[in-house]
Each structure stands twice: as structure tokens, then as C-alpha cells.
Amino acid sequence: MSRLGNLGARLYRGEVGYDFVGKRMIWYGVSILITITAVVGLAVQGLNMGIEFKGGVVVTTPKLSVSTEEARDTAEEISGHIPIVQELGTGGLRIQISDVSTQESDKIKSELSSELGVAKNDLNVEVVGPSWGEQIANKAWMGLGVFMVLVVVYLAIAFEWRMAVAALIALIHDLTITVGIYALVGFEVTPGTVIGLLTILGYSLYDTVVVFDGLKEASRDITKQTRWTYSEIANRSLNSTLVRSINTTVVALLPVAGLLFIGGGVLGAGMLNDISLSLFVGLAAGAYSSIFIATPLVADLKERDPQMKALKKRVLAKRAQAEQGTDEAGDASAGSADEAEPQDAAPAGAVVGQRRQPTRGRGKRR
Image (cartoon, rainbow, N blue to C red; front, side, top):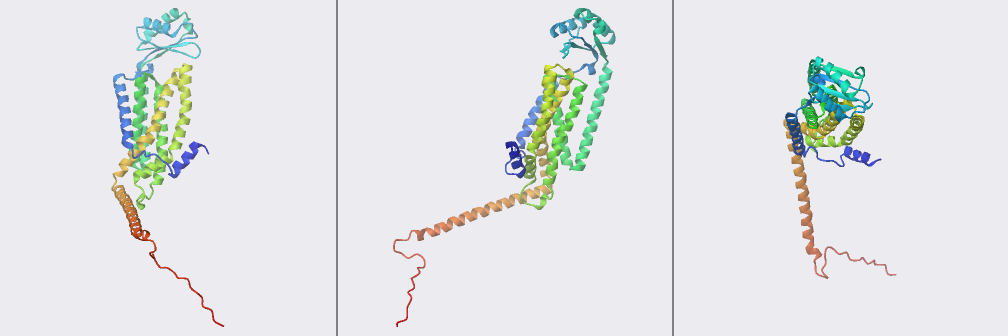
């Protein structure tokens, strides 16, 4: 068995473990700090909305000998707007100019054709109206709201309302961090980004549900025992599924990282950047929230229940009684040793204890 597999088996049996729930205030503080940073970045810089949401023109060229910097300067001079120029894997360029009307797009196409030395028919021009992007945004918000409601209802039925609330907070946490990082990095928000954001919700929820399912099984008939509190059982359940959560996240992150760094960075595919960045950040944030946020939140909410409070008192009382019994046994052992010291220190020749005399057999005289 590998070291990771051996560690997973020991975590599952409870032989080793890390106190995630006990140190939850640290994780809450880290999450709050990251969330504040994301919100500040979103408020200061804002999101770089794509052409699908603002409207404009997208010009795709065949293979050119013109660099991206030259094409950017030319497009800015022609349109009067700052364009976004991306190099495609075929050697062509994708020139995106926002806030351009249909009449201006014809002029831009003609002037780009002459300035770049490309036939007008070889340029692929797409004009996008802002109303289409507004419809996409409204549908995305609607889908997000419906998804959140269904998640809360399902988790409340399958588990309990406390787990539903914790999962909802974890999902909002993941979305906030992902959107904030998008604002800080300055990546363009396109329909592909929206698809990626909606996709990460499922991945984030998957890890959380796995941990909650183990916690539900472990906490069954919890009030009939006095060995562990609810927080301790939650921590044991979290440790037992820790390796599985890490393996699942790593396996999911590897292909997404390939899309982000190879497809988007090396090949220059813009759509892959839009989807893969949101997936990469969302998967990592989802794994973090399922371990450090969702389960500690459930433990906090559950410990406020009167039954769990009574259970905690019984567990702590039993432990205090056991420790007191151990101390009394230690004191009794020390007292016995003290009483035996005078006998051990008896002077030489003194008789200690009962001495048995040898028995002499008496034979019959003949």
C-alpha cells in the first residue's frame, strides 16, 4: 500500500487526524480575509465584461505577418476604442472592439482590410448587440437562483437544515472568491465564464455532500453514547474522507490546468481561458470550503442544539470523572509505596514478615 493509501486508512480508522473543527476560528479568519480581498478587488476594478455583454464587433483575420501590438494600435486608431487583440493558434488574430454600432462595424472592416493588407472577404466580422448579452446575464442569474433554492431544499430533506445552510454559505463563499479573482486578474467575462461559474457549483457541492454523508452516518444515535461530542465526531468524519476529497480535487484540477495553461496560454484559445480559469479557481475554492468551512459551520450550528449541549456536558463530566479516578489511583499507589518504605529500611537482622522454619521429620526408632 502506498504512503497516501496508508495515511488514508489510518485517517479512516481514527488513528491519526487533524483538528479541523477545533481550529475553525483560524479558517473562518482566513476565509473572511480572502473574501474581503475579493470584494475589494471587485469594487475597485470591477469585472471586465466581454463583448457579448456590452455589444461591439469581433474581427477574425487569417494568418498574418503583423504582430499583435501593431494590430492593436491600428484598430485603436481606426475605431477610437481600446481593442482586445488575441493571437489564435492558426496564426491569425482576433480583434475585439466594444461599444461599436453596426454602421461603425462596416467602416472598421474596410479600414482594417486596407491597413492589414487582407482581402475584405477574408475577414470574418461578427457584430454583437448589447441586448443579447443582457439576456444571457439575466438567464444566468435566474439559473443561479433556481440552483441555490434546489440545493437548499434537497440538503434539508436528505440531511438537515443546518447542513443546507452550511452548504449554501460555502457555495456563496466559492462564487465570491472566483468572481473576485476574475476582477483582480482582469480576465474577460464571457458566456464561457458564466458556464464555468455554474459548473463549479456542482463540483463544490460534491465534496461537501461526501463529507456530510459520512457525518450523518457517524452521528446516528449520537446521544446514546458519552465518548465524543458532535464536534469531535464531525472532525473524525472529516478526517476519514480527507484523502478522498484531496484525490478527487487533484484529479479534477489536472485537466483543467491543462486547459488553462496549455490551451489558453500556449495555444491562445480565448474561450478556453474563460472557462478554465473559473473552473480552476472554483474547484480549488470548493475543496477548501468543504473541508475548512462547511463542516465546521455544521458543528457550530449543531452544538447550539439543546440535546448536543447536554451531550457535551455528559462527555466532559465523564472525562473529568475518569481523570479524577486516574489521579486517585495514582495517589493510592504512591501511598502504598510510602508505607512499604519503613519495611524496606529495616535494620539488618530484623525479621520482616512471617518466617517459616524447616520441618524435621522424626523417624521411628527400631
